[in-house]
Length: 554
Image 1 (cartoon, rainbow, N blue to C red):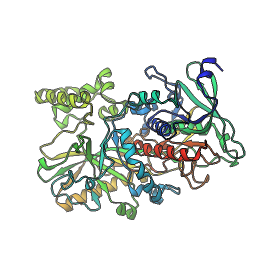
Image 2: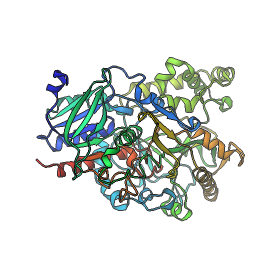
Image 3: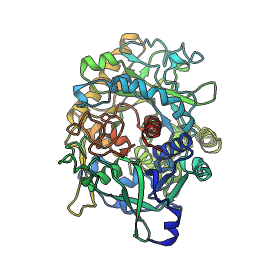
Image 4: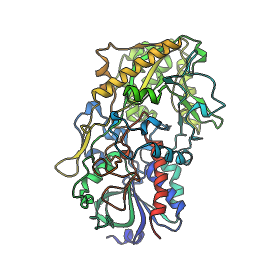
């Protein structure tokens, strides 16, 4: 072992955390604060230099690339992980996500008791994400309660009071690097990959993790009382698939490992035309007393989803498709054209988001230019105002939503995906390449269609408005499949289970068959819900830090 690195490493750490995305950083800082006398090592694959192509992403093979983003489009390596490019959306999951449902195949300790317990850590998580109070329903915010998403809307099986909260957005790397460096009991090691664990002893304890320097490919050993895999779902799954020796005390690898890969179905298939006063429609962002941006969403009641056997889904008001010049909005056309410029487009949005706007192609450029000219000077003034609020102010405008005087808005759906063993990750014959087999199921697609119909009937019943579909009923299934590309929100492949027969980790995130290996990644979530996983995973990281504080002896 190289002398310089050997001198920097402790003989034995209390906790070694692999991965420095939001979960890894929160876990390391929380444990460090709770245990100032304990030693923590935080290992990060990405180096200090700007991130570029890397061997992890390039060694992932997609069986169905039509339905899944390229890994480099939806993950980041380096301190802070994917928070380097995320939009900052913080969403709490719903009670129905923790209920036992056949639609999600969720036999696990993921239940209402866990839901109530994790709520204790939400406010602490909110401080890390800098998204204000941990309140995600307007009924809990008296200053914002009392008005509806649109005139004449009434809550029932469809609700409009659930909100998403928005971070600054917090880039966890630059935001918390100084805090990490200042902690005398916390060591950050960048440019190293967590590779292989030693075999567990008869009590299930692993003593050594082999790490590899990314540049030199040299191998080193790290010893710790506990190890936490806090990488993204792809890499957390790959590490365990490569380390099946961890399960030797079980005599078999948990059958769920690598299976039940889930994300979200997301896209637009319809618009809504409200019948009331356009000025009374909450089409965009609202702000709480602390200035935090919120955005309301259509949800469906827990009882209704359970009775109908439908998947949890959120639907919110959105702009028309940017790439279609028929919207006749000069500001939208200007922003679409800006997104097409290679260098500028990459700065304006992450690749996966940019693709959702441009659809990966130039479309009717001349018509877009005519929209810009016809809409002058607003075509330039509106983007300039948005640019200032979105890129210059400290708490940035999270997105761009434009008022429509016709009270006509696109609808963006964000839907849960069912847990299917056919959606999976496996290692190729070389033992390194991660092969992903993923596509939406018929049940996933049908649930999206049915819930749009439910929303349409409810709005008409209220006298609030009605949906206008963009496609024929026969076209809808394939449109939903082709636009709902996975890979951005990854879950399921190291799922919680009541035993090693149904899961990979237990209710405390400990890997079955071991005594000191944990996974703190969205891959442990056995369902995907309607929400992105980042905020909830932060709460689980705080919970695990508290559990480790009680379990690791002095």
